[in-house]
Image (cartoon, rainbow, N blue to C red):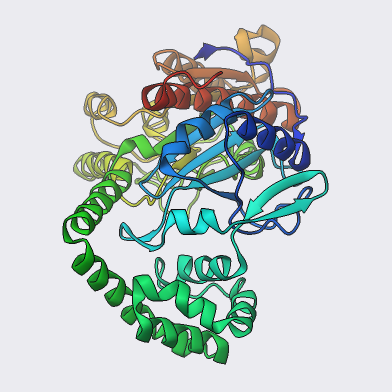
Length: 459
C-alpha cells in the first residue's frame, strides 16, 4: 500500500444482532448448525464474553470460513489456527459502542495437550436448541457446558475461572451422577468423583488440587488406550505451539511516525479501543520508550525541541544500537501465545533522523547500516502536518521540525507499505484515516493467508 491519505472507513458497523443473523443464515447455507459454547445469555444484542465461541468439527472449518467470507460489509482482518481452535478477527461489527472489531473462535476440539477431555461427537450429538429473539442456535447440554467451562481454565490454564464457577457448581449439584459419568471415560472414576465433589463443596483450594490428578489421569488413560494416536497428538500439539510462539507470522506491526509526540500518542490511544478485537493481543507503545538511548524516566522531547543532554560515547551508542537490533528481532519470534497486533510510536528511523535528540554519538554510517537490518513493520504511517508539501503549512513549522518532517517523508517513501496522512485536521479525522490504513493492511495480509489455507474465501 502506497498512498497519501486513504479514505476513512465508514464508521457505521453492523450491530451484533444483525451480524449474528447474517452469519447463522450463511452457516445454514453451508450445511452447518451454529453451536455456541458459552456466553450466549445476552443474545441477540449483547455478547457477555470477549469473543464468540462456536464449536464445529475440524472437517467443517473450511465451510465455516467460507460462510464468514460471504458476509457483506464484514472484513476478516486476522486469522490464527491451532489444532484445537481457529481464531478469526472481524472488522465491521459493533458488539459494543465505540468498538468495530469482533473476535470469533471456531473451537475444533476440547482438549489438553492434544488429548480430548470431551469428545467432539458426544458434545455435538447431545446439543440442545436455544432461541434468542429471532435467532435459533444450539448449545451444549448443561453437564457438558459445565465441564468445558470448568476444564477450559482448570485443566488447560491451571486456574479457576470464577466467572463460571457458580453455574458449574449448581449444575454439578443438580446432577452429580451425570457429571461423573461424562468425565469418567477420559479421567477415570476416582478423579472424576473427586473433582465433581470438590466443586459441589465450593472449596476452591480442593478444586485447584485436582489439577494434577486430572492431568495425570487423562494422559495415562489416553496413552494406554491409544498409545500411537495419543503420542502423535501430543507431539503435534507441541510442534504447533512452538510455531505459534516463535513465528513472525503471528505478529502484525504498525509504526506511526511524526514530529509531534503528543499527536502520535493521542492517535495510538484512540486506536486501541477501535482495534481491541483485531487480534488476540493488542500491544501499543505510544511514547517511544523503546528507544534504548533515552532513559525511561526522561520520556520524549516535545516536538520542535532537541535534547540538551550530551550524546553518549561512540562505543556506548554503537553497543546500544546493536542491542536494540537484537531486541527487535527477538520480539519478532519470542513471547507470543497467538496473533499479536503491535502499534508503536517509535522506530529506528527516529534515531537516524534525529540522532542528537536520542543521544546517539556513534558514526552515522554505522547507524544507517544497522538500521537496514531492523525488521520492517507491516505498515508505516506518517502523520504529516504539511501533507503534499503545502507551502503555507510548511512555512508555519519551525525550521528544525520542518527538516525532520521532510526526512520522515523521504524515509517512509522507501518502505514497501506506507501511508502519509494529513495530520492538520481534527484528531478524529486523523484517527479514522489511520484506522482505515491499518484495516486495509491487515485485510490484504490475511487474504493471502486464507487463500493459501482454504483457497478463495468468497463464495
